[in-house]
Amino acid sequence: MSRANSATWLRQQRWAWPTWPARGLARSLPWLLPLALFTTWAVGAQQGWVSPQVLPAPAYVYDTLKDLAISGDLWANTSASLQRVLLGYALGTSLGLVLGGLMGLSRAAEAYLLPSFNALVQIPVLGWLPFALLLFGIGEPLKYALIAHAALVPVTLGTLQAFRQAPVKWLEVGRAYGFSRRQLVTGVVLPAALPTLFTALRLGFTKAWLSLVVVELVASSEGLGYLIVYGRQLFQLDLVMAAVVVVGAIGYLIDRGFDALERRLGAWRPV
Image 1 (tube, one colour):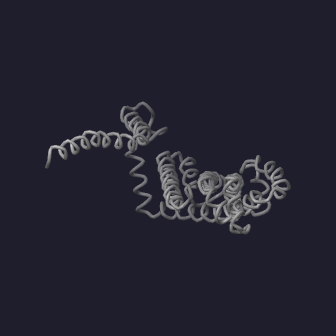
Image 2 (tube, rainbow, N blue to C red):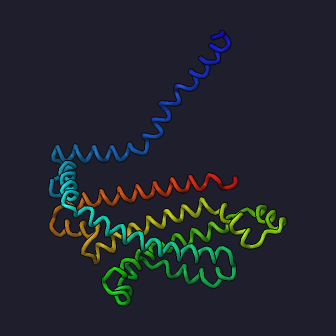
Image 3 (cartoon, one colour):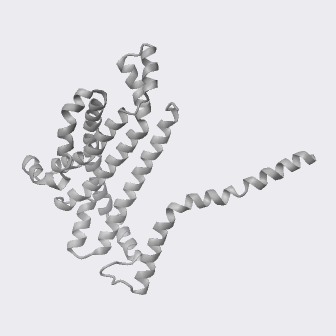
């Protein structure tokens, strides 16, 4: 290796090696707070800072979670919750995309629909529960309707905002090239709307997932929310904590899935 090449290699190594610790630190930062909370929980349970009847130890919660998995109760209740949230989310998202797209592409539709929509969405999910009970009874349609309502609101408003974000210059260029209205929507408006649209979809799922637990807390005989209620009634807080851990883990994994899908689809979005 020549002296010039050696000097170049040394400069590259000198400036490259510090990036590894920085990258490792950046990737570990989001886990510092959960790790600190878990450590405090474990140490507090071991030292007896809190009564086990109030906050069971992590090992006890893990044993309960393992017993639920072995008995099959965990999978049965998890599948019931996932079925409810996916169907309700699909219904609410489909209606929200249509309604938000309609208002985003038509000023007249926005003028007619948005004021009433804004008035109705101020009512929380539990506020609709008495009317939903009269309409759907206490069965599965009630849960689907309330979950769909929870997803409908952020998806509709996010779609409306997303469809209004297309740069005016892009629209002018499309019209200059003779684009039809459909071509403008699919080739200009939709690519520009993708980031905000995916944010709305992720927020809609978060709302749907939270409403699922609330609905199952109120009226259900199976599901993760039912496990929480059942554990509370029997004062088995280890069962409550196990169900809470599963709820959080599933919600986190699905949110990461949305993030990966957004990055993949956003790769072709025009800059």
